[in-house]
Length: 307
Image (cartoon, one colour):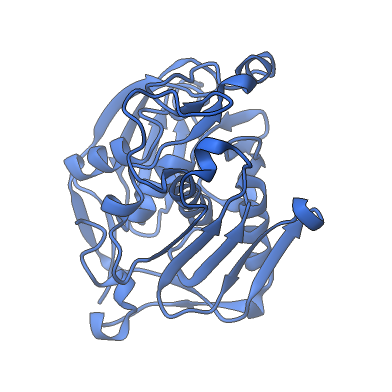
């Protein structure tokens, strides 16, 4: 039986919010089977619970933001991506401010943290969502068209195309594809950092965004080049980060997907719209579990998550 997973022991870390600039501590704790991923704002009394669900996303400007009434947990996508990449189904996340710390701008630190806590299989079957019919969402027209879709596929694969019309980005690959039947999340995706443009920093900070951003937690570009002295971690790091984000956004569906995700210039807003559209179209998917590894897609039985 393919089993659900949590972590073996609690583990904590501190950091700064990318947009808020505030110091924050998070503690990851084991959770019982069928709990899902739940954020807890422990700086509020009594603490407020925010399950990691697509229906609770209340903002998508430059981040995925969970919201219940006036309580928010922002920038959840990198941590959610790491949780998905390691196949974790159940987890409590205590957080002392409204934004998940950005760490180094990738999911790599969260992968390290989760693996340091240890992964624990649980005596309950893992529940997958298998996509049966193609679901697509889009916005804009012509050169401004952006779209994303989920289509039936016996595994989990993602394709992404970007078009930023910037010399530093155009010098790298604008398309990437990963198939987790053979690709390692940890090696291929997890270390891809978020990125931004120096010319936009002043306006973003005036809007209450990017106040914690720096060369230590993002790839930053001027009009022509990457400003980080250490350069890029992957030749296609920009588009790989968009895949990292998509994995985190899609995990807000609540279960691992058996599907192929294909997108062009998509972002958090379209990804959330895609997740909500899928869940609402109940004839387009089904829940499945597997009694043996031989029955399951190789993407979920190979050791790619831990490589």
